[in-house]
Image (cartoon, rainbow, N blue to C red; front, side, top):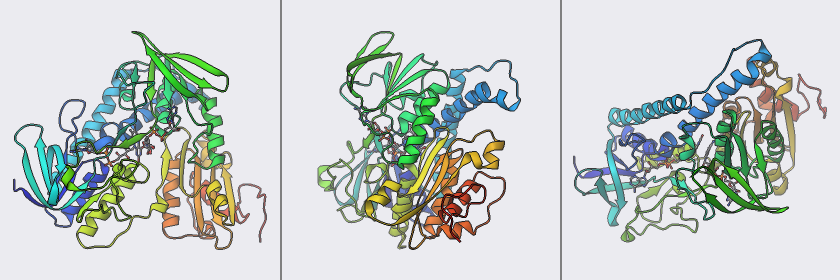
Length: 479
Ligand code: FAD
Ligand code: NAD
């Protein structure tokens, strides 16, 4: 292996591997270093997303929903099943198989595109030199014309509930329970808390979620947050807002958590406790002092809107830089940086980063919430359509939720789209495309949608901005 590269990428999560693949596609001699080892102890490209994040959590979310559907909803549609059981080790093994397949997929993509994949630790030194310490063998120094830092993030820990990887786990441990715990505690009613809380609740655990804030899902549209809280409580998630966790005591069998709420000091006992209170950038051991790369006050690598650091030809992308910690946001940044290194001039449109919570119903949105639009003083009009009025949702026996379109009253341009409902993650993609092309609500209203689809609810919500929805009586009427 030559030690000279056009580009060295540190980190092979969705931000780093996408950057490396695009660099190689553009003819740049590229190496990508990653130190992760999978559950089987083998090198594992793919970062948090493939190993402990998006993919394994969705494997368990999908499996647990199928179980719940069979157990609770099949009889409603005339399907009788004698008994529905769960084999947790098999469920986890299938999840692991999916993960291993995806990891191999990245290795294959590296090979196919000509990326030099290196397994071990990378550290940025001065003058774009990278120290590569392989899992086996000697340290080498790589010289790069450009370096892309993509080291990702790790879970935040809090002093009252130290992770012991047994009774108290983080999101990684919560993907590995070998049986369904009777009582599961979750600290944090954020995205991970809701997704992994849902998995174990569907499989039969009694789940209590302790959330410090008084407000539920403050980053979501308030109407959607309010409706979803009601639905999740109806599903049996015991979400306790305004609780401050103060301590925990672990015994052989259980963990007793103490917290404070309006009523005073409380305790609650669980078989397992999942701590899901956010993630922080992971820059430990990444930067030698003479690399001179600046971090910001949050510990993120400091970058501008083009993901350039303060050091010439050194870039950073993904969870380790400002902005939402989402796989697709990192991927877009990685691709943008690769193309800029190759001389093109793309930008990432941070105004159209979609967010999804993969509960059931799903929550998905893009653009501004109604409370943000209101606070900004813009004049706006809201169109809404409930899934209960959708023929496809009725046919599928899946009618909870709404689509909400917020448009600028003057220009009719779409400012935000918020979906609570079945396949919201797929519907929001259409909203992203509409916003990327600067569509108006009227443009969407004039667009033909196949019938019967769940997407028609988005069409109808756009029509209802002007009071023209067909399958619902419009509150406001315009000609
Ligand atoms: P990472 O994926 O964290 O990858 C960074 C890689 O760099 C790691 O492999 C790390 O070991 C390696 N590395 C770090 N430092 C070094 C070094 N010095 N040398 C060598 N290697 C190094 N996001 C979504 O968009 N959708 C979802 O559904 C979703 N679900 C999630 C579920 C869970 C349970 C979790 C925890 C996260 C989820 N996320 C989801 C978030 C998503 O996983 C992250 O946003 C994404 O993985 C970040 O990508 P990244 O490339 O920036 O970093
Ligand atoms: P989060 O920021 O979404 O939620 C953390 C929650 O914990 C917040 O509601 C916060 O108020 C609460 N909290 C913080 N400290 C607390 C304390 N001491 N006691 C009680 N509650 C406390 O973080 P997360 O759920 O850990 O997820 C981390 C990140 O991973 C997310 O922000 C997201 O970017 C990413 N992620 C995305 C997806 C997805 O896209 N579907 C799924 C999982 C994770």
